[in-house]
Image 1 (cartoon, rainbow, N blue to C red):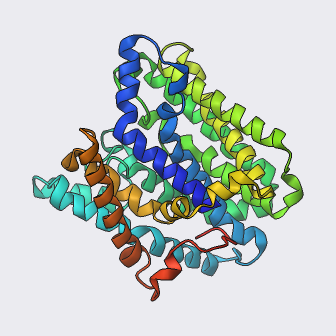
Image 2: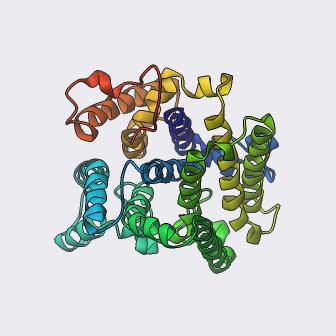
Image 3: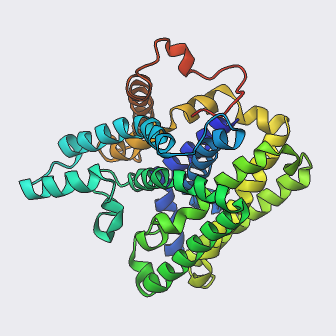
Length: 364
């Protein structure tokens, strides 16, 4: 089911990068944003779901006790496994872009960019936050730095109550977003419209996405914390739609921009209720989320995410249906190759990389 949620998230992100920003600017030009545009205009929020599910999957083995985090050897073992999972495709994507998409102009730029991209520190400065090599890699930078911090977060949770650690992370994120929006609100309208801004989306601003994933893993082990009551589902939908409305209409000028930092907090609460409900029960919703196509897209989501942004311009996916179909065919085909041979090249039987009949555990 979790892989199905990843599949939904990657569909939303790809849709946004193909069409969402066009809808956003078109609505602003008309002077109003229709209510039925709340979903397509917030499709990029799949990124928040990725962060949440990533933290959930990473922390769950430590809550269950199947892995331990007690000393430096455990920390380095975690780094080794996480680096093996994230870095090969990340580096290949960067090098591919440097050669074919955005060739480096001179030696100094090459050395500087190799350092920034190789250390995932390009998000530490505004000018390179949305990298010219692949504007989507800011999420991978955040994922890498969160992975570096996670062992110490786990150790902190063991020293003090998880509630205090989660509250601290949520508070840091909210304060960071609030400071960011104060700094940029005067020229916000002239920035890229819709989704990502460095002052609102650097690591500290997105800590609550990861914090809710950690909390979800903790609650999952104590299944009594979740409920099959459909009121959880309705509450989740209400919170998610409220977050979408707050973000959309704040950026559209209908609500004060200073309310914008609340949207992430409300959205994460909605995701917590939604996933908690889905983990607690089996019904038509969970069966749909566990469908083979959604699970397959979820399993391939890392490759799909890396390549879909770079492929938009040369394949001209926006123009018409034939271009869009060509774009999707080549994107899925190429993503399958990197999913099979780069992400999981060590797996002998490709059938192990396909969705299984029963998804008993989150895919790591």
